[in-house]
Amino acid sequence: MDSQQATLAICGATVVVAYIWYTRCRTHSISDVPGPKNPSWIYGHRWSWMIEEAAVVEKKLLEGHGSIVRWNRSFGEEHLWVADPKAVHHILQGSNRLYEKPQFVRERAAILMDRGLLAVEGDAHKRQRRAMTPAFGLVEAKALYPYFVRCSNSLADKWHDIISNAGSGEAAVIDVYSWLSKATLDAIGTGAFDYDFGALENTDNRLTKSFNAFGPPSKGRGLIMDLLKWAPKGLGAWLTDRSKSPGMIKLRENKTYAHEVASKLIKEKKQEMKDGTSGKDFLSLLVKANSALRPDLRLNDDEIVPQIRTIMFAGHETTAKTLIFALWEFANKRHVQERLRTEIMETLGRIRARGESDFTVSDFDSMPYLVAVGKEILRVYPVVVEMQRAPIEDDVLPLSKPIVGLSGKVYNDLHVPAGTIVAVSTVGYNLNKDVWGPDAYEFRPERWLDMNEKVESPVGVYGNLATFSGGYRSCIGWRFAVIELHTFLVTLVRQFDFSLADGGQEVKIMRPAMMTPMVVGEEHKGPQMPLKVTFLGIE
Image 1: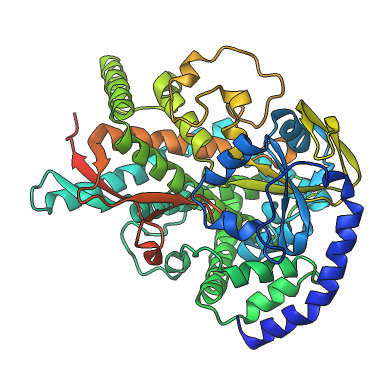
Image 2 (image 1 turned 120 degrees about the vertical axis):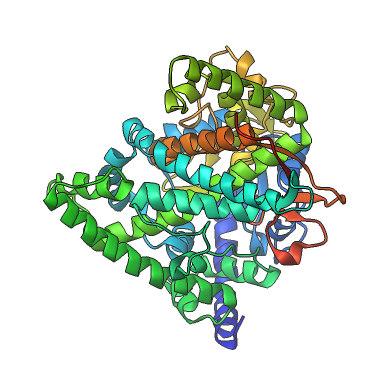
């Protein structure tokens, strides 16, 4: 933190503390909700949670306090942590836009990805979502399948080369994190924009190089981020534009390069539309659908550019990490990997019997264990650990089971004052035993083959999972993500066997903002997932 940032933070501290005490008085109704003891009035629970492994915090809260928990942010500010299925459904789907992303969350999203779909609310969100929806249907998602096949095969070729050049020629320890991050960046580039990042080929692309995993925030930076929540709108962006930290410099570089590429791509797509040569990538479809809207509903170029950057950021790293956790589970649970490979090879036999050689999206849909594995990975490893919301007016939150307050009062629903920060826990809901059964903490794809009960309060757009959110803020690209996940799993499990790396390297999954794999003792090196990869050959 430079001196300018420190001065601004200190000058605002008094006002912040006064405002927080006002907020605490205003939100006294949630003070009766049970929760863990505040470890620090200054830092609250946030910092101690940030340095815990993924799902550890959520399991402690579920076991010790239930699915509705009061917790503290900096300076004693009280928030709600929510994993109750009925409450989650109400917040995401049943409240008719009553719960919005808080302003400070939108400001942070805008710093990372500009003011695209993830950083706006109200009419701006409605306009952007309306313009983008035609490009994200099922037909459009299936049209991107060939791009995913191409990138997954390119990744397989790279791993085959690495293994061939290894001493034994049969297996090699590969950091699958770095490779999958590159492969999914290439996939989102070609599929969404018809743009070649060249990440797998290590081409000299400035935009590709500017994508870099940011480390977890320091304790001090986390406190400043909380302080900036109460700062005037735009102050965080102003400081980011002037910060000399390596991470912020890298972020500014990414913004500059992304804007250059996006502006060029938009111009090309508009010309292709005029020439009648438009492709099936997302951007071509968006430009075409946008032009068909009434003038007052259309997005101008300055509004389309942020959508491109949003998809670049949100569309590749989340899928990469989901795939990484899948391979890690395969390495730990051999029977899952072997059962999936058996289904893949049996399906391939049927494909060849009908005179074809390649899988289709319809083939994926006919593979129950593949679908089950994909859903179970998305359930146990929702990369984004929580979604923060706040009601714009007072609300009554319905509960699936009553809670007993600190006063002894029994609550069948909970009054939530306007402006109260509510953390909808993706992990907590996805691991809630009331929803998924007594073995909810266990990675067990077979649960999806056994399910036949109707869900009372369905959450989300896929498999009753909170992973893709729900309602008007559900992930617009969830169909793309599922097809890409299935494509890579089939390509990689068909050709390679995955096991734990020799030498006893221990991996832990951290939760700074998104679930991130790291090697114990090598956290300073950033995200890693070393696995022993054995080439099986192609039948």
